[in-house]
Image 1 (cartoon, rainbow, N blue to C red):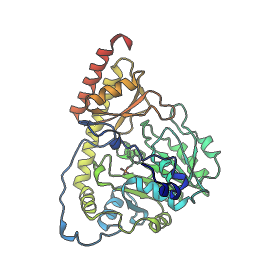
Image 2: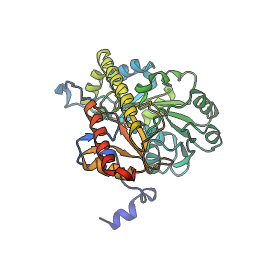
Image 3: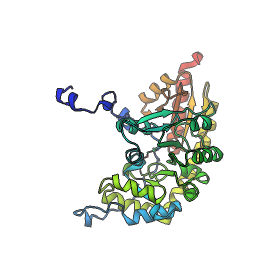
Image 4: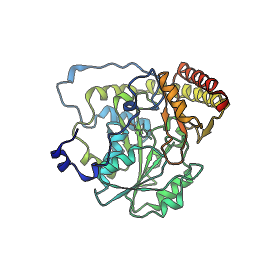
Length: 361
Ligand SMILES: *Cc1c(COP(=O)(O)O)cnc(C)c1O
């Protein structure tokens, strides 16, 4: 569909962009969703509709207090957003001037940093990860004119952790020039390595969190940005007046009770066990090479039949994610840890594929 009016009015930076191909948008069918790093657990919650005629609070107290306690920060040091994705966009809109400023990213990594920058007409400087997926600290520190440095830890899709020394060097290098945003979407799977408790030491540190992964609430769209009070106050100038719907606030408050945090931790422990099993089983399959590390709820692997495996799994309703277009991830597939049944079904389907592929492996 084309429209002359739209073609004349649309912002020039948006012309080459395509709507985001989320895992959800790529496939409509399927029964086993192991492609978006969601949790296999659907936990029950209650809703009270008594206040649905009123606008919600911009930053609901129960949500802010609950997450501040959980993360071990002061309630002045966080903002709740429509998913961590909104936090990424708010940071870019607040701290980068369109057409002038730049962000720095380290591919292969999470796609939304670049997409948000592009939609905001903000430049992107890329410093690829080293061959072992560690940070190229020298390359990062040699990059000038950046306002935000995005570092995903554990990194999606490589599952690798970022070394404390490397991140410290980056934070110190940019102390007076840029904010360093550590995306901890998967931190519950590697909780000892959080940076949320380091805010006092690094005023340019920002930590992103989400309820979409370990907390099993991707459908809610709820994330948090943790930073100094000065940074949070700046983000509050830009965020929409009512970003968090009342039912979302109610469910988040329940998810953050001590009892339900413990439930989340048990589910994480279960997924970590499943991951260990799946990783060992995958490694036994012909031609499978594990790639990166497993510090989160997914496994990345390489196979020369990448495209055919993907196609076969899709035909069987088993959806995983093709990462082969990412820098240095040729022939790589990422599989989210699902329920025990789903993980077993994935292995059975792979075996069926390998048996049929036979000698060509
Ligand atoms: C899933 C994911 C997010 C987005 O989380 P939402 O809260 O669902 O928007 C952010 N960063 C990384 C690295 C992710 O994998």
